[in-house]
Amino acid sequence: MKLTVEANKESGKTSAVYFLIRAGKSARVREFAGGNVFADYDRNGRLLGIELIGPCEINILERIARKEPQPVRRFVQQIPRDFELAPTR
Image: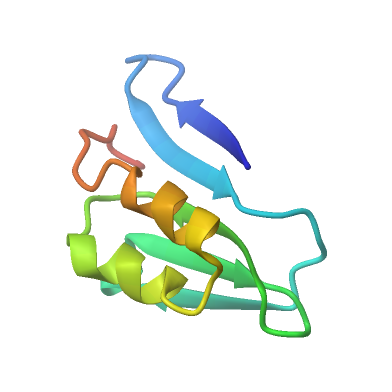
């Protein structure tokens, strides 16, 4: 599991956070929380990663990981649910 953070070059504020759950090729992306969260899945439906570009409710991330093994669910529970993001424009 790996964390990648993107920041606005001018303000230094976080603009996106990507949580890599496992390596693989993305075959499908699902949008959650009105476009604030995206989940990448491989062709077998396994969760590859979660991208946060805005705040979301705790249950969104838990719903994304509910079919994953316990270590992945525990990891997702540690993801910050509400953080300040830089404007995207």
